[in-house]
Length: 442
View (cartoon, rainbow, N blue to C red):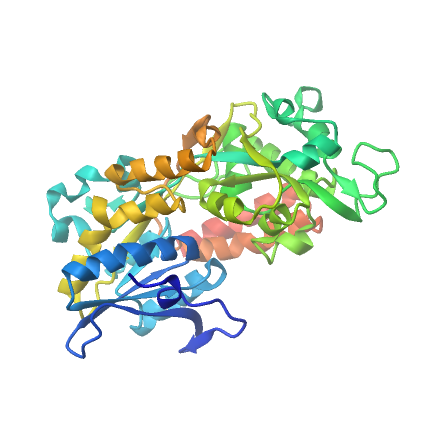
């Protein structure tokens, strides 16, 4: 079986540039003959790419005439590069998609998986993911991952330093009404400035932090959507964005205040341009509470050099509600190797093809029969993952417009400015919503 170094390229400072788009290329798996069909698979997650090593090694035993090449492109550049690749005809044969899939489906860039793999292909796949990626009666990819909800990873050593323990994280509540809020006080107690003063000290200096209590930031999946949902707000409907509504605005105000008013989280100057900043701080022992999904759990297991645990997220006025999402492996309709591509898609949608994902602990497989391997992995690690499934989960409606990426490009700079404290929240939300909806309608 091939070693990981044969599958996933080491991330280097200078990425290979193809047609102006940065990408990280992994060598081939397969027979290597000049007569082989070469199928490229592009994704953004190195941990899952490592699991694909085991999966594709098994695949090539049964299909020695098909070479699989894995391309790992980090999230920060993935979407811009994908637009360029699809437009230029250089896209991978198979590539991961999230809810941005509508643009590609409506422009006939994707293989109709339901038609090509058969009506019964979806029977063993997570129904929520199947529904999320079904459009106009067609399924546009093979479900690969299905999130649980979100939870708080906590540094038990930092809790103890503050005179707290895991029981103090049970039953926490956040609220726009200060008298009903119990979360801010805990976050303040876990925040320390460079002079050693905690966030609840009158002399505390929020501009010079040595330890962060919590990871509030413009992180839509891990932070923003969850606050909006747990306040009974709406981020978007099928027709457009509604994040400037009263309930949504209250929730976003709260998240911004954690950074700019209470100073219990890293500055947006650090998190706006580095989506991994909070994770890095948690792994380095400088962040007490890290709200995240199961997608980061294995990295914490492998990298944390301190005692840590898992607790439920604080409940909002509408309860503990966190967003969940699925990921598909989509087939490129313009592939030059359609039959080989379909064989790889069939493999990725099978129990044998997805068990490696679960067995690695890197993500929850969307193939239902492969999930037992995921549960077994974490049971063996002694990690209780139940808090990730403790609250209510919800999914965002898929936009009917094909301009979701353009809309996000409009509102993202405004949100980043709000988290920096440079833009007033209510005015920023109205501006962002107007510009995003205009982009959808363009």
